[in-house]
Image (tube, rainbow, N blue to C red; front, top):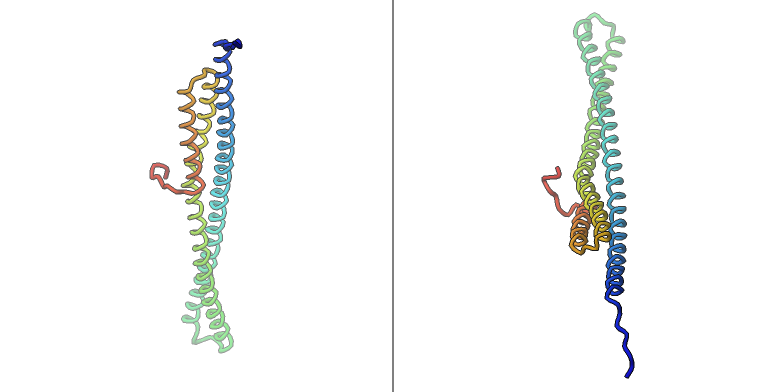
Length: 195
């Protein structure tokens, strides 16, 4: 009869611990990749939010410049109209015609600036909506990153302590973190808590 050598129980425990350590280490690497993706998404989202805010501010400044010019033309036109009422009867026909032409030009310019400012206002509001959309996504990326960082730390603790319970907690945190980050990309759920 052939002799069968039984493995040493300490060696079996060591192999088991190495297997657990490898699995946890590989899964922790996946957590790190998810963290990098969430971080990249959060950074991109923040840049887009800031860019939209800057562009909206620029549009509002441009809008204000149009308003100032519109008011300038209106006040100049009113001044000329008042002058025409006061002195119109005593003015030479040529001068009166020139003032009336200037009034007409100023009315047209006032109307043009009024129309242009409306278009600028619409663009500024669109940019503010874009900014607000990115602002709504930001907390999801932040919470996703935090939960993924916690998952990585807890996985490390699980490796050191060989604790499946701690690793289960790490997996739960990672899944939740990945879901938060995923929602940051696609805004599947809108949570009023984050607004």
